[in-house]
Image (cartoon, rainbow, N blue to C red):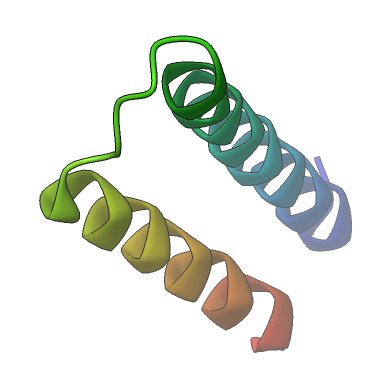
Length: 58
């Protein structure tokens, strides 16, 4: 697999993971009226930072 394809697959994987986590968090907030724990938010922020680094790397 080429480097570009691998990078694209990694980005897709990160985005899918973030999307699933955000969906769970959204459901908890809207349906159960439970706010996310600060560590959950921090984890998602770290994952987003990793994704940005992956996108920006050449």
